[in-house]
Length: 196
Image (cartoon, rainbow, N blue to C red; front, top):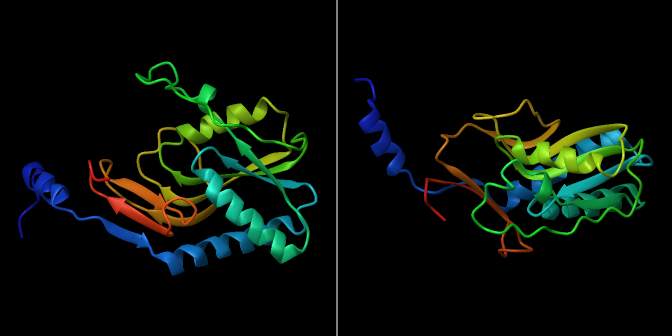
């Protein structure tokens, strides 16, 4: 079999079909596994807090918060963090960016923070989240939890401590996370370029 040239590779990529990375059952088992890892490291969460990155990390953060609260039998601090004005593409956008609401009803100073987002790709969203977080105080430490780590094509030296699923994909592909709260189903898809 001969080598795949660029023209053939483009044809192969263009003919790829959307495929499911995690179905409903595996999706929820993955979140449960992440929760157990957090409980193992944070025990009763006395000095720990979960913060979801607006907008898409919020669904995952709330799910994790609810499961952990039920498992340990006590409430865990949950916050939501907007990164809009800390994004490095903020002034480059052709559209007006509308910020989401940051909700931090607790002090983050000297707290162990679990920063939660759905997909880690270039690292730029997390960089913005770290900048936004520091506006509210100096945490003791910050751990990153993501549902999907697209480990290729990272632009910044950012790595997640807790990962639901690691994937290798080509740059033009998209990862789409569907949530029951929004789309009515829990699924993770990998889509070819220009597929919605």
